[in-house]
Length: 430
Ligand code: FHN
Image 1 (tube, rainbow, N blue to C red):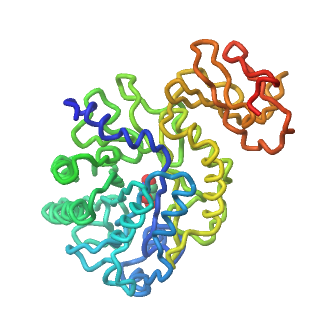
Image 2 (image 1 turned 30 degrees about the horizontal axis):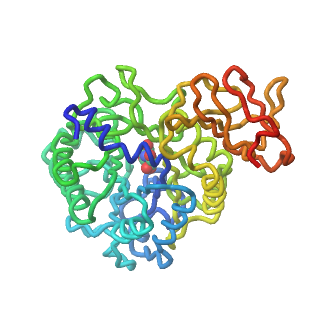
Image 3 (image 1 turned 60 degrees about the horizontal axis):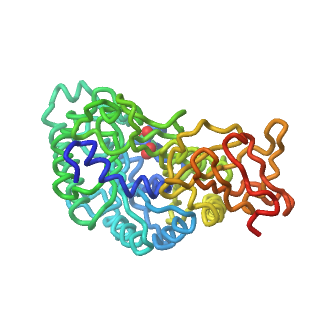
């Protein structure tokens, strides 16, 4: 393990930068009302109003092995499940609260089953953990107006209260890192306003994390409000700055670099529709083509994509999501080499799409169907590679999303001949 924080971070994130593509899973009591994971706040539900969901929760069709198979078939290499979201409901068997899945009709430790199932399918496992807790009595929320911002008046009246909450929160993190085997990733969510860094006793928390699971990687939201900012971007990242930045619902225009101009690990988390938690009425799903292009864009900028699913109250991933994952998996089976272990190509972005690179292999991802006078006639799958004049690298051209549109004898003529030559029709691999 390297000596400086950044060297240690580089060691820890090696697998993360290779795997590139993961599944985010937002699941909990909120799947029952099916109006998204913030329903308690947006509809100003009191704890009593929300209790029926606890009393009813019984996901009889929960089969995480099925989830894992779908994630694997989609080309995903890791998965992150909400162990506890802002509503404070624990999907794991915490000894520090009764507000947990093992006390519902489910009577199951859903996190235990998740980590076991995804490991069995060969995927790495991460847990999302909310710093915010709308259930715990010592987390001062604004009365029944459930709000992530702490009620500062209440806090000032009795700061010891919040310290009790932090003892609870740290204790649960310790439980997760002690009782569920080797975890690969912790996804904390989220800091805001003055509730940032040491206000969560972040150094103490990170000391606990590093002592229990030194290899684990952590996102940047212990000291970043939302996905941006935090000392991970600075020249001297703090001990709790995290191992990767976490842009949300957006892909940074040009990747993510620190104040030294050095690329830092980052992961864009993106929903398939417009909700993280299950929202039955939200049918605004992205297409597989959009998802693939977002994945390619992330990797072309040295980033990861964490693609979200929101299982329903029965424990099933919505069919719309499954259909998209299946199409993405088809593309990944053909083009996964242009994603795994790849990153920025250090070339200007071409007009027709994006590049990803892995060593001396350059992958041209063709998005546009015509480029100025040169029409893209690329059944790129027919062209196994081209030679990059500049340095002799091989170029592997990923199949355009709509490859089927092109006649079999078509070929792709790069719009930038100064970059490439390509095998003439008679040289093409048959
Ligand atoms: O408030 C949460 C939200 O519910 C969801 O979990 C996202 C996922 O990154 N994080 C917070 C919003 O930034």
